[in-house]
Image (cartoon, rainbow, N blue to C red; front, side, top):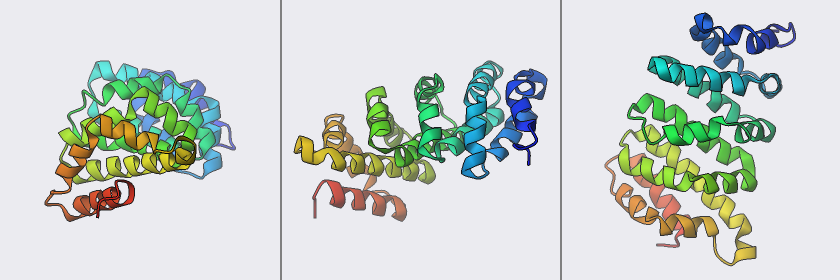
Length: 220
């Protein structure tokens, strides 16, 4: 209804850039983006990613973690959408901003939302998106996260992203003889990070790691 009425377009193009309404607007946009894929796609076409980027940059100067969390959640809803929406995100300047942010976030709640953004994009974006993210440094980001965070949900979402990446690498393996994504991960010392996680006292983490190692590293 909010899409069909034209209200959403007005929010994205006009009201959303008024800093007085930023808190309300971010919550409203986030909820709209939990709708069906057509609603999400319409919002993306309206320019919601550019609006969220603007709100995020302005919020950084205000140091409001609750608003930051809402913005990251909204973007993760976009990357959980179809490949068209993911590609819109990949072409935005927001990607680089979030890559840089990953290395300064200390708040678990913020990191959960940020890592969902990229793991969603990898899962739904296919080989091309995976390769673009690797060029940007997604493997380095994942190694950093699993080495520096202990929250179970953060680790599990990061492992899901890694598993999707390795799966994309298997698709091109017949052309390269080896899984190039796996090779790059190993060169970064990622296997050591996984081995440490395999000893986790959290059963779900150790099980996921064991599954990845058996599936892609051929260790019985």
